[in-house]
Every structure is written in C-alpha cells, then in structure tokens.
Image (cartoon, rainbow over all chains, first blue to last red; front, side, top):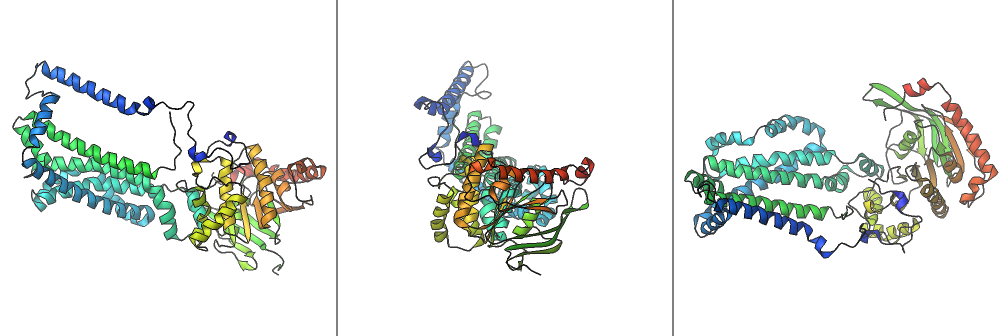
Length: 285
Length: 273
C-alpha cells in the first residue's frame, strides 16, 4: 500500500517535484499510444464483423438461419421507421427505470443498514441469501399472477434482480472499512454519525458502484426474460415475436438494443467510478 | 494522593480484556505506576508484546482500565478527548482526502473548530511538519515518511494538552526514521507539548526523551525509570556520546532480563497477532 520510503530523500522541501503532477513513465507516451486501446478495439470489431459478413455472404445457410451484419443493420433501420419500436422502448425503458431505481434506493438503504448494524444484518441475512441464490426469474409466474402481464410484473422482476447485488456489495463496502481508520476517528472522538458520513460512506463508494454495475446486468436480464414470457410491449417482447416469426435480423436488432443499453449504462457508471477514484495514483504502462 | 504536579498520573493501572478466540481473560498490563510531568517527553520501551501500546490506548481513552486510576490533570480518563491526540503507528489517513483534508480530520471529528479556522491553521501545521507544497497531494502519492508527517500534523492541529505517539516511526526505513526523530524534536521544542512516546527502539527513546520507562514483559509493569540528562537541543551526533551509550547499555540490560525468562512463558500467554 505505502510507497517505498527509499524513493525519496527527506526532509521534503517544496522545491521538489510536485507529486500530484508526477506520472511514472520512462518515456513520454506518444499520441498514438494514447489512442491505442480505441484503435485496437475498433480494429478487432471491424475484423470480426467482416469475417461474419464473409461467412454470411457465402450463403451456406439461409438468411433466416445466419443473417449477416448488413442484414441486421437494415433490420435495425427498418425497425426505427416503425411506430411500435418507440412504444416498445418506452415500455422497457420505463420498467427498467422504475425497477432499477427502486432497487438502488432500497438496496443502498438496506445495504448500508446491514453493514452498519450487525443485528440488522443477522435479521435480514436469511432472506438476502435465499433470494440471492435463487434465480429471481423463477418468480415471474408468481408475479404474473399477482400483477398481470403488464409493467408491474416486469418492474417486480427487475427490482428483485438488481436489489440483491446492490445490497450485498454495499454491505461489503461498509464492512470493509479499514479498522485503522475507524480507530483514528474514534481516537479523535468522532461521533458515530460523523464516522459513518466521513469514513464509512466514502470508503464504500467503490463497492456500491460495483453493486450498481452488477445490478444493471441483472435488471436487463429481468426485462428481457419477463417480456419473453408474457407481455404486450417491450424490447424483450419484440425479440420474442421476431424469433417466433423467423425474422432473425429483426430479432438480432432487438438484441443489439439491449446490449447497447447495458454497455451505455455500464460506461456511465464507469465514468462515475473514475471520478470517485481520482485519489488513486495513476499508473501508465 | 494525586500528584498535583503531574500532567498524567497512572496508579496501579490494570488492563484486562476478553480474548474471543481463546476464551480467556487476557491481562495486558498489571499495576502500572507512572507520572508524566507537564512539558515532559516521556518514552516507554519494553519487550514486544509487553502491553505498552495497550497502556497508551488506555491513556487515549480507547480502552477502559480494569482497576487503578488514570488521570490527566487530575481528571479520570474514560473516553477520548480533545485534551489528547494520538499519532498512530499506521498513518491511518483517509485515502480519498488530500493532505489538507486529512490534517483537518482530527478537529473535524472533535468539532472544536470551524472548517475555515481549521483550514487556515492547518497551513501552519503543514509548514511545521515540512509538507508545504503538498497540501493537495493524496496520501497514496506520498512516501511513508511524508504520511507520518501528515499523521503528526493532524494530531498537532487539535492543539492537545498531551501528545501520544505509538511507535510512529517503526514502519519507516532506518534513515527516514532518524530524520523524523530529528524533526520531531524540533517540532516538540517549538510546541513543548507533554509527550508520551511508545517505542521498542531503545536509541530512539533515549534520543527523544527526558525520561525513559522500561516495562517488564507481559503483563507489563514499570520496571525501571531512567532519567536522560543529555542536553538539548540534541542533534543526531548525540547518539555516539559516551553518556548516550551508557544509557543504552543500562536500558538494554534491563530489557534483556525480561527476555531471559523461560521462552514458553513468553509464548503461552501471547495474544494472537
């Protein structure tokens, strides 16, 4: 954890290089090097798409069985010229927003509570363990009985899907507070409230964000699977119908919407995470 | 019988605690009697595991004492207070806060100062410990020695009656440790805080302190008090002074007697690390 003392000759004077500006690198990274991740990533995607297109063009299999990326792209464009896609997106989007939003609020409250109050954790642990080890998708039939096939049953699945990873990671964050930091705070007579706000909560942020990120995956699974089973609108429903009617390119276009949403949300969270991590020394390879 | 001239007075202090793992009552210190005079720099040395850190934690108010009395300015110590400040062995800095943010954390926790005052005064403390120019650096960007300077500045900003130091330089390399000792003496001579310093390093104790107290092996008691009459200010050369070496021999012999007891008795009651 600590940087080796031998790196620096003491006593320290202000004239020494400002460590906040210090970046460990033997040579100055070239401009090309900076864009290397994007360039290589893009290249590999292009190669994969080309290979896919070539295999599809050979038409060993019919379009129904193996559409090429071009077919999918066309289906994607067609999709957005119809009116239903907007209803589908609005439906799935609303379900996602409400279910995931509720999961964040309750997940943070329960996770922080369970991390901070041991007895609260003892009380809720059996339920958290039960639900976390059960694929929440098995509850869909129950939710359909309770809430019908419209949005509420989907929201319930999404909510339960995202809730537990958020609870568990948030709790782990609180529990992982360094004992040394707690001792320092206690030694200076900090109140419990201050310890919670200034020590425990900031220290839990990386864990919380990990929970939120895992929650996105579970929430999206919830949207799609719940809509696959029974729904009137939604991207999952679109995928299901396209599949049942052998419109494979359209089905894959729906898959891309789901994947794109997941990637977008994950990227946003990653950005937030980086903002909170600006205190970590940057290491350039 | 309270010694009015004493800043800190310990009388027959016993500290016991329950060990969860071995289901046994553990006696860390057994009847410690000592006083720290106002403005004095007192160092406690002793064999490892002798309960010296435990004793310091009790002085800080982090641990309750089982019997005896422990008073600061005649008042019983029951919990941490703004009249004491600890410099820890591990820096214990909030990694997401800058140097400045960490230095003010102590007064922030004590709620003894407005944030504006704290920031303004923190600059002085940062200067005192030689970290000017590093206010906005994060702990992970600092070397171990610099982190300990922040640890010290955080304690100094609370302007305590008494400074408690728990082996603050033990984790540093030899050269840095010597530099930090020198710096600490400079800072101490400027602030003249009463200081209680725990260490296992005999030279460090002699170099810094007005008096060195030797603890017995666990359960710890005061075995010997050595008055250090080396003149101040002391630079690092004093460590080669014949008088210094004589102190070192005397204290080392005293500690060695404690180590010479049968090994199994030392091991049997040792706390799980």
